[in-house]
Length: 121
Image 1 (cartoon, rainbow, N blue to C red):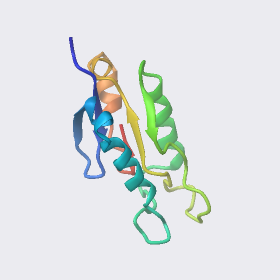
Image 2 (image 1 turned 180 degrees about the vertical axis):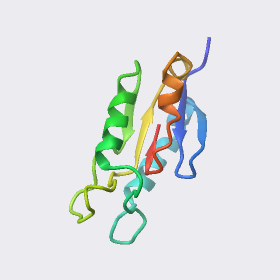
Image 3 (image 1 turned 180 degrees about the horizontal axis):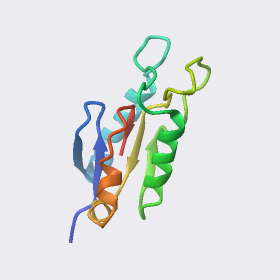
Image 4 (image 1 turned 135 degrees about the vertical axis):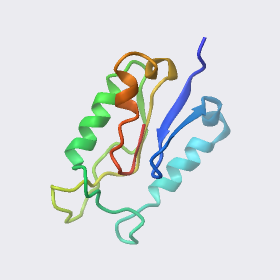
């Protein structure tokens, strides 16, 4: 049996597998609170120059088609900004994907796809 893990593509662009018990430890809640502090006003978040908001949302929806996947936080475009549509503007986002699903044909490539934005899967 494979234990459930979170797989997260961090802003540093690497994959980290995290044991399920991290949620009971309060770590995921801390990550969510820290991500909510990121704002355009203080430049702790900004536009993604290589991927559009639409592409990030499409990627998130594709991840959510994987059984057991769910949005842990974020998942919405940034609001009240003037970033052109050719760039990406999303709230920091984390998506849970069960490890046993990641290992299935076709899912690994999707889960580990780099989008170089504030998006973790």
